[in-house]
Amino acid sequence: MKIIISRIRHLNWNIIILLCIIPGLAPFTPPHIFEKLTWLFQGTLVRPMDWFDLLFHGLPWVLLLAKLILISLKK
Figure 1 (cartoon, rainbow, N blue to C red):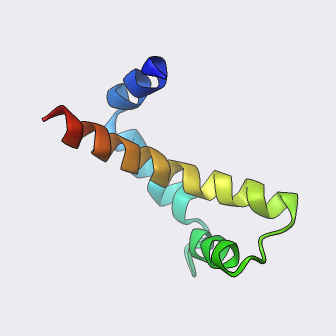
Figure 2: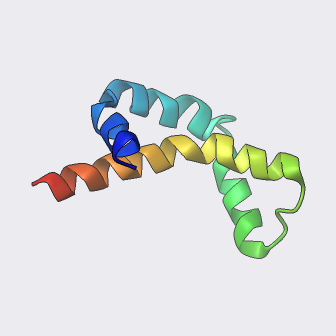
């Protein structure tokens, strides 16, 4: 766990922002992540490909949130 936290702390902000913009929001009209989150909350996210898609488009946002939390805890 300490290794993961250390890696997240050392991630460059530019890389995280690019990951959130490019795969995190693609396709851009409308962002795919919103559709997948809607399906998740409705309980209609059932196919394995949809779960992979949610992971692929959501992981950059999880990294961003984790980095923000780690920065706020450090202070």
